Image (cartoon, rainbow, N blue to C red; front, side, top):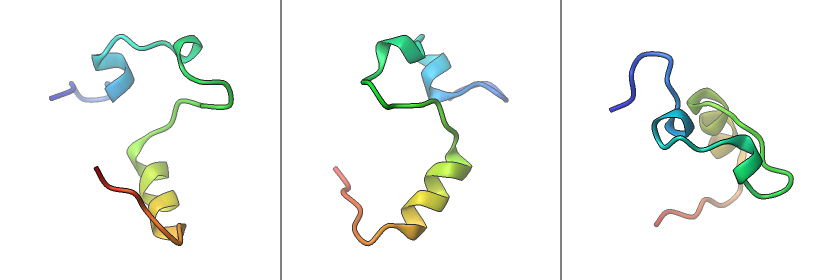
Length: 44
């Protein structure tokens, strides 16, 4: 489990430069908001 203030990206040592173009670093609060606003959500 990540330490307080540490993100999933930090835990996995993933840099923003290693993500797909157009992606941005975010947090669980933003993910929650976007999920609630979405018409459809994929879960796998």
